[in-house]
Length: 70
Ligand SMILES: [Zn+2]
Ligand SMILES: [Zn+2]
Image (cartoon, rainbow, N blue to C red; front, side):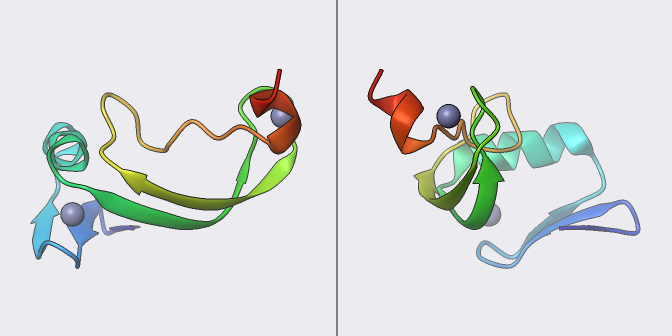
């Protein structure tokens, strides 16, 4: 996502070199995240399929099935 210090979003044709502006974009618009991520609680690898707006963070809070059901 970050090339030469530039943040680019192809979904919204948006780019900036300012992390603060990028953070704002992530909070303003919905984005779809897929792939793999670590559960924030236990660190287990989980499949990521998340869509939404991020507020004050750069990735969604991921919980594995076990932690989510606690
Ligand atoms: Zn975007
Ligand atoms: Zn977990």
